Amino acid sequence: MTRNKGNYALIEDDTKRKISYDKRLKGLLKKSNELKTLCDVEVATVIYGPYRNEPYAFPNNNVVCNTFIKVADIGQI
Image 1 (tube, rainbow, N blue to C red):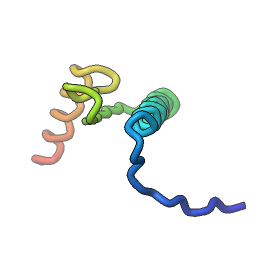
Image 2: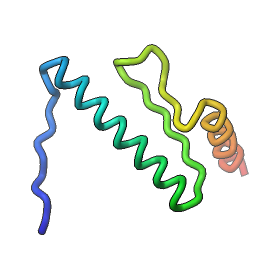
Image 3: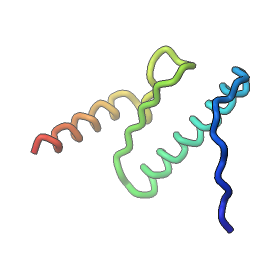
Image 4: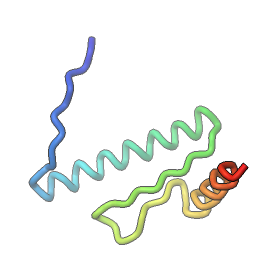
C-alpha cells in the first residue's frame, strides 16, 4: 500500500507549530541515534531552529566538530 502525498504548508498557529517542531526534532534525533548504533557510523546532526538561541548539536558539540573536521580533511585530498 502506498502513502498519499502530504500537503506541506506553514502551520499558522504558533503553539501547534512549536509542538510539531518538537515532535519532529525528537524523531530526527531518534533516527540519528539508531543509525549510529545499528550501522556503527559516526553521525553528526546540527539543527538551527527558531526556538533556541544556539544550534542543537547531536550527540554533543565536540563530536560534531570532530566529524566536520574529518569531512573537511577528506575533501582536501
